[in-house]
Length: 426
Image (spheres, rainbow, N blue to C red):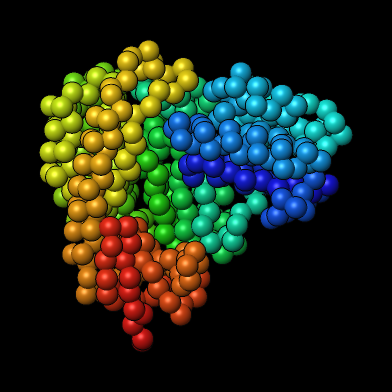
């Protein structure tokens, strides 16, 4: 039997797909890279935004139409968030919920034999130190915890991922150690909220970062998204850990809105003043820090004044990466009971922020032109060349280099999303 897996969405969900593949491989089930070769297709869904929902929904339907002789299995967040819709579009499909990955072989074997098996519901099964099948081994994703401590009104992902479940530091470090010994040059510590790590077990994110960074080898560590409210009481120690030379000078700190009123209505649990205080601490201690933020445009209660505050905030903090999302109702989310703002208003605000986003990020990148950067080559470019990362985790296009190596480059050109470079000969 041969299985093809395609995963959508976040880094965490990508790692879930790698675990599914690892479980199957342990049971001598072949993982293939082409649908045409496969007997079974697994769609590991994301459901965080409506466009993604539409994309995976269409994909599931299309696969059933185009490959009626193959079995289609659905995994990922859609299984827990919207089983009613899933049952309508794939009435004959088996399911693997995001907490039931260890049962992948059972589901696949059953589906192959004509059974409809649906494994869903929550569990505390660890996702660290388990078999994985990774793409090339250079970038290794380590899930440090699952679930969150939040109750953001716009979010449906929490219904799929559940309450916080942190994994032991020892197990996380061992997985990272094994990955590095097998050639990984970038360790990505990921979670729905890495700043929540250890709040349920008494361990600390700062200790975890230090222990991973202190492993032998020449590699870099990327710390995933951190909710501002969960950094407030531990900022100094996290900053101290992130100053380690093997940790990227990078922080993903979503703010969502520049208005305290909207933040309160979103139930975010922090104010703009608190956000700015945390950010100021990071920037004072890590001068070359790259800041990535998330912004939701057009939350149902967002007024013109609220939107103006978001614009002002972005101009003030000048993040290097801005992830913009137009608000849309999500199944089960509290804010879905509120009337949406007019679509034209939404589009106008989104377009305005997109223009500001490009201006800010291109200006930030342009400041690096003619600078000398030590970069880590992590993957092949989709249009040729290679993609490397600066110590501040900014992507750089390089040529004539080897994957997994550090090289010195001169930045020759900047765009809003990446840098171009020439390699300096030693």
